Structure formats: C-alpha cells, structure tokens
Length: 120
Image (tube, rainbow, N blue to C red; front, side, top):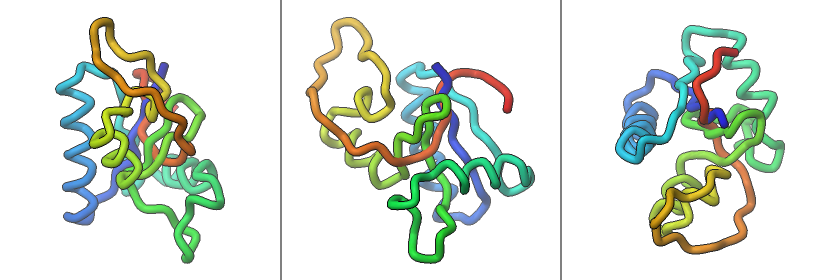
C-alpha cells in the first residue's frame, strides 16, 4: 500500500498539507510526500491522474491531492469530510486498525496522497 501526498508551496495549501501529514503521522499510516513545486514529473503525474470530474474549472488541481498507489482518493475537502465522519480508512482505501471503531460508508473517490513508501 502506498499513499502519496502531492505538495506545493502556497501558505494556505501548506496548512492543508500539514493537516493531512499530521493526521497520517499521528495514526502511523505510511505515506510519501511527492513534491510538485520542484519536480515536473510529479506535477505532470498528479495533473494527469486526478479524474476529470474532480478537477477545478481551470483544469489544474491544487495540492494536497491524495492517492493510494495509483488510485485517486480525493482532495483536502474530501479528506477532511472523511475524517470528520470517521470514515477516513475507507476514504484512504485502508483496512482500519484492529479495535478501531469505524463507520462503513460508500465514498466517491477523488483526492491525492500516496500511501506506502515508494519512489516514482
């Protein structure tokens, strides 16, 4: 399992990225941040792999975007909603840890972070 977060450098974006990273670290979920500000290949991959219906009108999705391996999970707003609704493991496509109280839900997938430590 490989969860990646694609990161940029604008301060409002940075705050959202920090919230996602903080949650993943606190819950000991392996992930890798993918820099899109300094790596054209990562930026291109992110833009090509966010589903069309999840892209903004200008066509350029902003970070953080969350992926599990190659599967798109969603953007920050979807991540935040899943966390608030206690369905974050379903959102991330992960099995909840043993003993965790988790709601079951069907989500429409759509954000970017890559879970699993793997280089692109």
